[in-house]
Every structure is written in C-alpha cells, then in structure tokens.
Image 1 (cartoon, rainbow, N blue to C red):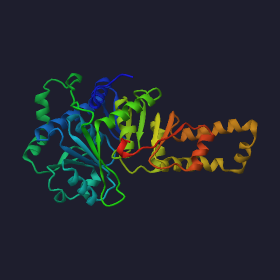
Image 2: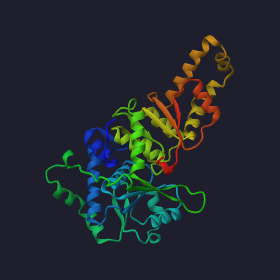
Image 3: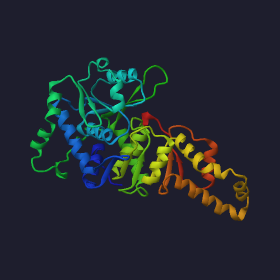
Image 4: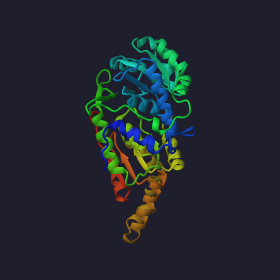
Length: 362
C-alpha cells in the first residue's frame, strides 16, 4: 500500500484526485463536489487566518451530520487547528462545559443547537458560526466580524482568476503525536471526558480501513452517513474513510428514524452499511422476520433440498432492505442481539461485528 507522509496529506490528495466528483449531499438537498468542498475549506481558512485563529487553537463543532459539518471539520484539521466535535444531543449545560473545558476559540453550531446554547455561558469564545450558511451568530472580535463580512472580497483578491487544484496546500502535522482532536465521550459520571487523539490515531485507523475496504468500495461508491460524526465510529469509518476514498456521502441531516434510513438505503443504494445494532435489528424485524417466522417458512427451512434456496431468498430480501448494493454490513457501538446475529450468519449475510473505543479512534 502507498505510504502517505501525513494524515492531512490524505485529505489534500483526495480533494485533488477527485476534484470533479460528487463528495457530499444533504439528503434531498444540495450536492457538493470535491472542488466545492475545497473552495469552502479555503474560505474558512481565510476566515480563520484573518480572525486570529492560530495552529493549535481549538474549534468546536456541534450539530447534526451535514455537508457543512463535514466541511468545517476538514477545514479545522487542514488549517492546523484542533477539532472538538460535540454531540448535538448533549444538553446546553454539557455543551457549555465542553466548549469552556476545551478552551475552544470558535464554535460551529447547527440550527437546533443554535437556539439552545447561551453565549454568555461560554465567555472565552471569540465567535459562534452558523453551520447551515457559515454566517456569524455572535462575534466578540472585530477581526472575525471583518473577516466574515469581507470573505468573498478577500477570496477574490487571493484568487483573482480561478481557484484550482494547484492552490491546494494543506497544513501537514509536524509529528504523528501532534494533537488532532479532542472527542468528548458520553460520560458515565459527571461531565463528559475529553479524549485527546493525536494524528497517529486517525492515521492508523484510515490506513487500516482503506486496506480492508477499498478492494470492494471503489471511488464513486455511494455511502449513507447514519452515525453521528461527533462519535469516532461514524467519523472514522463512514466520513473520513468515505471522503479520502473518493466516495459520495449522503447525510440524513435530521433525526435518523428507521423509516428514513430504509428510504435512504433504497434510493442511494450504498455500497457499505455502517450502523449500530438498533438500526440493523429494526430494519430486519420490520422487513424480513415477519415473513421468516411463519409456519410455512419454518417448514420449508427444515426441508434439506429446499433449505438452500429459501436461505438465498431470505438473504436477498435482507440485502434488498439495505439497498441491494452493499457488499458488507459493519455493526458496532453496542452488542448485536445474539439471535439476530445467528440468524444473519445462518443465511449468509456478510456482516462484520466491530469493536473499539474512542481512545483508539476507534
């Protein structure tokens, strides 16, 4: 496998290599190609640079999965700042605590979170940026206000004729041990605990996932982003892998109910399913188990000659429930129901059980 000299080199290379391919789509919304993502990253870099953000400063992100969440995260790392993803399900008190504890300089917020947080409870913040359009919710810095108000003008002066691949030069970490992000887990006692993740941890996961998945998940493959990107499992295995591998990611950007997920699977036909057990179990119970548990089906499954064809039929029904194009289903984050797991294995569904922790990214 080709050796990449830094983690951010992966991001730079993917932007350049897949420049005219689709990168992100907000489900039933707009699509960004890789060059659109690069342009937005560059504008955020200009905003950071002209508002006094330095390499090593912390930037927090709190909102549902979306194209702009992904852009803000990539812009943070490729600028040399430290990303602090915050779960959007957290209470305002928890969000305030994480922003303060991490000493974040900026906070990106989604539409729901924006109405819940209180800027007065985060006195060290220099600004809050609205994820849907990157407008400024609150600015405590004249530099930030000026940078955002004159962003297009500054961008136009820097790139008067065009913005092309040759302009892409992202921050390269000085050491694999350099801090890339702080991920706050759902704390079992008191407030969430910040897990400090070096570039090495992200890098190792991406190297491994690319080696395992790229033979079957080719550039241009569709993926549905179900898992919260503020969790390491979704961030690494869906988002970072997908983007670096040239895939087209669809973000549900709303509460991912089983019916919405099933609808998205049918329309997007993802090449890889990455989910938690609850999603898998609900879809299988709803779409397949009712048919399998009839007396007639149980009888057929006990007939040796017909058994193989029936199992193939059940497997096809299950795979169709996940869009009909997935080569593998990866389940993690919690234990899969033992009965469901045994059933899936018995009919030959290609399922992998993942295990990891935030501390190992994941």
